Image (cartoon, rainbow, N blue to C red):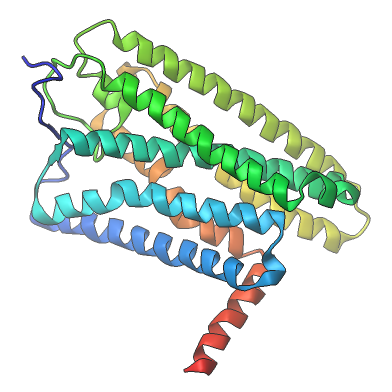
Length: 310
């Protein structure tokens, strides 16, 4: 038995024992990571390059791409290295840093998705007031608030989690340092503090989710009143991808952090964590760009311009 003061490292979840399956895991995560790097990198570059895309919607999309890159870079490269070198160890300080960074990017992304739903609501339901309600200064403050709230949430959870005495060993049944797995190592009822903090965070997340749902109810009501079929198609094309991202993100994250331990298994934990921490950053660029004609046109011009310069 040991306590948190004597723990110098944690043991992450080992992937399948055969070398072939470890390499398969490495290749799968590498493909997802490269897809996230390429997709989000192209979105960031295109929006920064094309001044026609310097609008609130693309400004928030720019921030979302940055958060996606940060989120997936916190967990996936470390996991790929572990598979390639067949190692499980992560230092105590490294685990603390990973928990904080992951929660920071994850929290900021959720708050940003909430802001993006408000942006779509104003654009579709109150278009005449769009420039007034979402000026450049307002957008800057809203994005900064999302990043700041993410940092505050991560700081509170990280400080509270690693202040708990840990005496149930140092093995985590996850491929990265995750708070629910660390709480299982606690030997004190003090872990209830972190559980209550998770509940409070979940409540605030539910408030944000209700705000998103109400926004989209108003959006869909307004869209259905548009007489032009082309106009309705364009409105749905910009809103449905955002709703799909939010739904996948919230459902899997809630399940990972709030599910009863009796419903937990190593394989289930792995699948759920991949769904909320790895898949969204990799598929977000596809979801947001495939149906967005302006972004596709700007990206085509950027690529064409790069080839012409060569």
